[in-house]
Amino acid sequence: RLAGTPEVFSPNADGRLETSTLEYTLAREARVRLEVRGSSGFLRVFESDVLRDAGPASHVWDGRAEGGAPAPDGEYVLWMRAEDPAVPTVYEEESARVTIDTVAPVLSVTRPVADGVMPAAESVLGSVEDATLLEYVVTAAPLGVPPIELARGTRERREQPLAPLGALAEGSHTLRITASDRGENESQIEVSFIVDSTPPRAAIQSPLAGAVLHRGEVPIAITGLVGDDHFA
Image 1 (cartoon, rainbow, N blue to C red):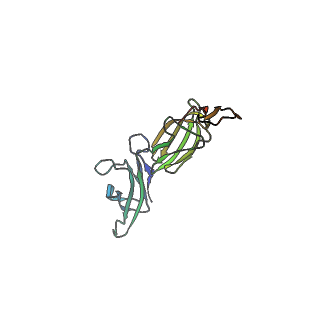
Image 2: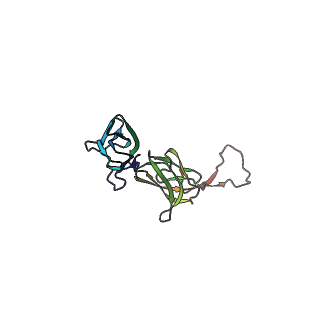
Image 3: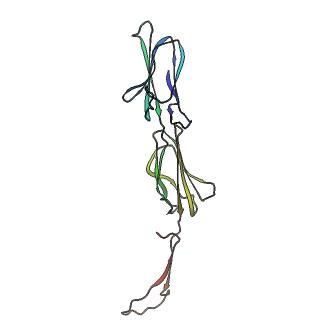
């Protein structure tokens, strides 16, 4: 058995999931070769023809290549070959996968725009992008009031509705989206906006209702009032 624990780690000096432990167990004595391989071939050799007794063994990988340079984000293959010391042509091979992810989820909000106005019937539109996304949560609340959870999810979203606004009262709110991935990287974005679902107010002042008007050459004046707190 060969495995990397955790399968996703984040060697970015934030103190969380900085390494992955590469572990295997031998059923009998064997000569072992253990490598980490990338898309262009082997990246780092941990054991090269090492004679091992039966039982468990492990190595800690800090996400660096053979020369000490940090390996780029992506998926890597752990590869092991265990040979019979007496008969090298008798062997077993195992492989497993680990992923380096040092980048936090990328968040964006298309709607609402900053300090914009939206009716409660519409939804938040935006993106949550990360190949190893664990979860995102969308909340909103007026200043100084506990937030209301609007939605949460575990799948990437690209320019899609993220949450309905129907639970929000009219007025100013701060929209907040937080997201985390399997590498324990976290990100957050906030947008201040206004919920306004009240239509504009309109009234005709003249002519009065039921009035009889003379049809002549002079245009008939029509006056009125239109009001709204958030005219576009």
